Length: 66
Image (cartoon, rainbow, N blue to C red):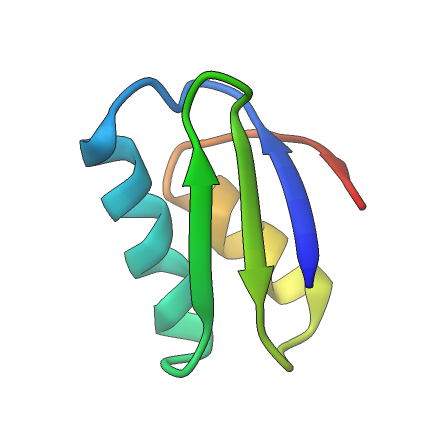
């Protein structure tokens, strides 16, 4: 499980956009998000940098990865 802290995630539409971006890299990825804390958790075998790039390309800067 990888946790990304993202900027700009403010609603369920944002969560959907991030989920679609991650699943474009790994269609089997499981994505969960907490809007108030702007945390996105991804369960995926894909490369962390590829997932980070996809989230950022969707318009959500990643502040940190854990």
